[in-house]
Length: 217
Ligand code: C5P
Image 1 (cartoon, rainbow, N blue to C red):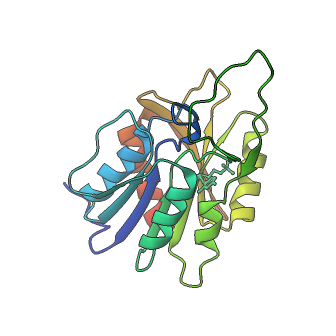
Image 2: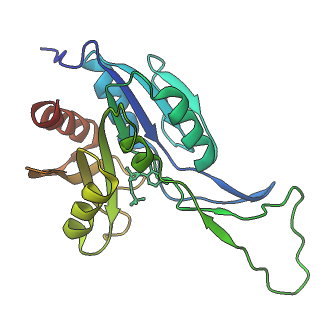
C-alpha cells in the first residue's frame, strides 16, 4: 500500500547545517546531519510530491529524485529558498541554520600572534519567518531544537514565526536527535500537541507527514 496523498504537491525542504566562514580554512557550524530532513525528502517523494531540497553540510545521501540545490552559508540558503519558493505548496524548514555570521570574515588565513582574537557575530535573517511573511505563503512546518522549557519555547516559536506547525525536538539529552538514526518529537500546531514516540527517522518522517496532511492540508 503506497500513500500518494502528496501527488501533485510541490514541497521545498531545507536541511543540514549551514557553514559560516571565519577565514578560508575555518568556520562556525553545528551538529546537524541532515538525516531528519532527508527522511522527510524521501517520504514526500514516496507520497508523490515534487521536492526541492536546499541543503547545507550533511552526512547523509541525497535522493536523486529531488531537485537538489547545495548551499554553504545561511545567507545563501536564504537566497536559494526565496528564488525557489514561488508556486510551492509546502515549506519544511528542517535545516539547522546558524543564527549568526562572522562580520568581516577574512580572505586569507588568520595568523596567530600571541594575542586574543575577537570575532564579531552578526545575526542571520530567519528564513522560515521570512517565508511565513510572504503574501502567497506555502503551508509552513518548522523545527525547534530545545534543551529547556521545550514545550513553552516551541509554542512561542509557532506563534512568533507564523508557521502552521512546529516539530519539537528535545536535544537536552546528549544531542539526542542530532546525527543519530532515531528521533522522538512532538508535533505542535494551533490545535494539536501530539507526541511521536522514539522510532527511526524514516518512520518519524512518515508520521509527521500523516499528521500534517490530516491537520494542515
Ligand atoms: O529560532 P530557531 O533557530 O530555533 O528556529 C528553528 C526553525 O527555524 C527551524 O525550522 C529552522 O530551519 C528555522 N530557521 C530558519 N532560519 C534561521 C533560523 C532558523 O529558517 N535563520
